[in-house]
Length: 234
Image (cartoon, rainbow, N blue to C red; front, side, top):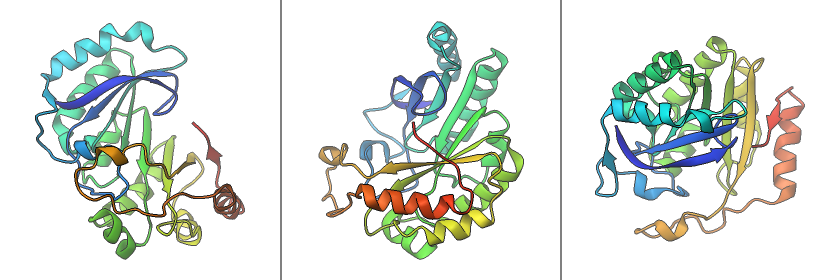
């Protein structure tokens, strides 16, 4: 498993206190990415760790998984390492450890991976494929397909929307998407635009007016709440 970095956080990427692994490599090129160093599949900054060593580290950390915590894999895009990911997730679940992934929804194997995930987070950047390609350099068709399938398959789904001025603050495309999605067991989180990773970009940072106001966030949520969408804050 190719790992960029790891650390603990509380309730941000799944319930409770969690050991979070950031895996190297991403197939999206989000112009606002806060971890641009994670984009290349191979990097001198990442370590190749044998899967069984990762499992042993997770097991050693068990006492830290309080309040329903466990292990989370994010990125980069963790599903690019699907075989390794499935192996470690299965082993972790066999140890009784809560598993989570935060991903961009683009993997054709996501429904397979989902079988070994207790807490699933899927990021939705923009429902419109043309706009999505403009800002992410990748189609969203597989993400949308997976979202709809997972919403019907799982008893838990967490949709995370990075809200960015001029990119996706119109709630109507999301409202149309969620009409196709079973929202019974699905919650939505708004992640307001920030520039915490701007200093890490080696290329020119292209988002110049991405911050959203409290009024924009409120209007976005209010519109979707009319359709029964349930929001959470982490």
